[in-house]
Length: 211
Ligand code: HEC
Image (tube, rainbow, N blue to C red; front, side, top):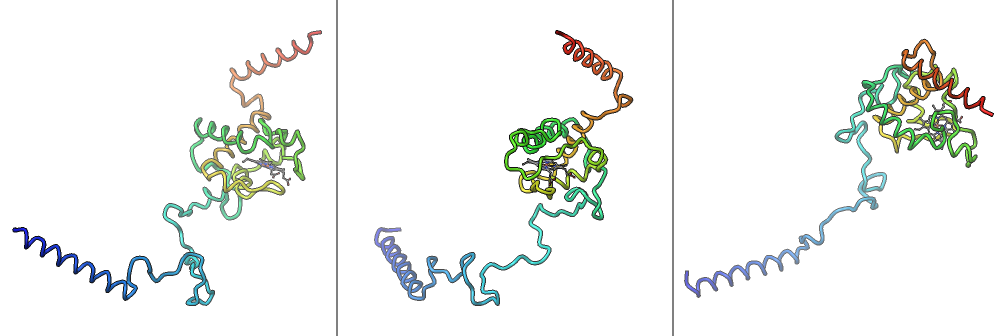
């Protein structure tokens, strides 16, 4: 290709581009001015006058299909379930302990007796945090604790926005651990635990009896 034909091609290309820009700008079909409605703007087209359309009923975002009622509500036919929906492993209980200490302990206390720091300081609670060590709460199915975390109870607010379902179950299981820690029958203890209990009682008695 020689020099003059190359510059001729360049000239043609340039002219075509310029023409295109002028033509498009003339018709206002350029990328800067696209006919569209912005989110949350008014829109005379729809009867409710809004641009944003409501979700079609029963729309579920990808990954959010909550078809397992027991898992997501802790209830079946409006009754709290008695079974954990996953195997109760050491990891699950440790996770429950860690999450409990973050979210519940400030009010309900380290052992669930309702004597958390907030309760001790009497800070702005219209009613004291519950102790978990009552016959009524010991008799509640585990799904009940899941439900209290999810929906709150009385003056206690819901933790649904802060604690995802998996962790709510872990905490519910840990509340059971706390209940057992304060109220176990000696017949339920292993011989080893029984021996430790006996030793700790002896230790307490001997320190108490010191002058
Ligand atoms: C800000 C303080 C506070 C925190 C944090 C808190 N609670 Fe509560 N909780 C309360 C109070 C107060 C009550 C008593 C509510 C009432 O009687 O109106 C209560 C009641 C309860 C009850 C008893 C329900 C019943 O049937 O009597 C359970 C179970 C419970 N909370 C579990 C939890 C768990 C699990 C967490 C952590 C995820 C938690 N709470 C976090 C303040 C708190």
